Image (cartoon, rainbow, N blue to C red):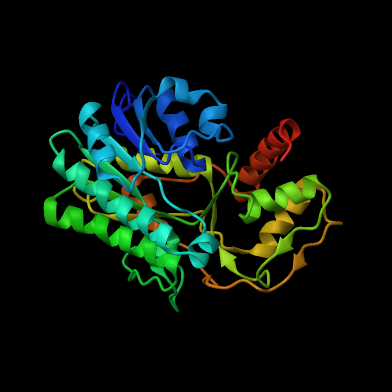
Length: 332
């Protein structure tokens, strides 16, 4: 994987929103290991999150606030003289957005334009901004895999929130020259994800508890899955290249380019955990989700030199080990 400098992150002031989430936790860990000075926006200190459980928060400057409040973001950038911004904070659950969309729109859309506007106001400080989008921003398309030049046409609340945030980020580059890059990943999994409604942590917990996992769909929905450690490194690699004109204002897909069905994914987890006797209970009652989504990642390979470091099986094997340790020491 290309890197602009072995010392790129040393003493660089980096602002991370969403640090208490799964991706934020691993990103902060990688940034600290690289020598960055991390500033994190924290709404509610969550002792169960990896960010706090690991003790990493002790090495981070914490800013109390939320992304719906412009003043908190503006103050964080100015007071801490931030050089680089990673915007990961969002409401990330499709079913939550479907039940009650307003908080999702507030967090994912208002939160994004607040952050971008704060970066624009302090453009003398902020030299690179990386925005977390999603494959969901593309909405439904007849042709797959998604490529970065496809239209963003979300239909349901979560998809729409990601389409809007993605387009707003592009507008801040094209209108104001803000050095922005947008990352669109498939379904991210890995240790630290305590959203038990997601299929990977849910299935692992079921098998550890000797229970059959319930599948809300018919089990044939197709998705990309990418390990959180690969995602963290993709964020850092993108930021390292944001001084390049062919990166600024651009969107990048990150994927293993190995789409699988829900049942295929669960089958891999079953094999890793020797749980083939616990067959999934397929209920086929999911709503508001796209049936097939997967990404083409050739642009990231070509422009950024990015390559995933983990196969699906390797990532899931590490993830199973993480949840075994976590659930052994925590009673839900």
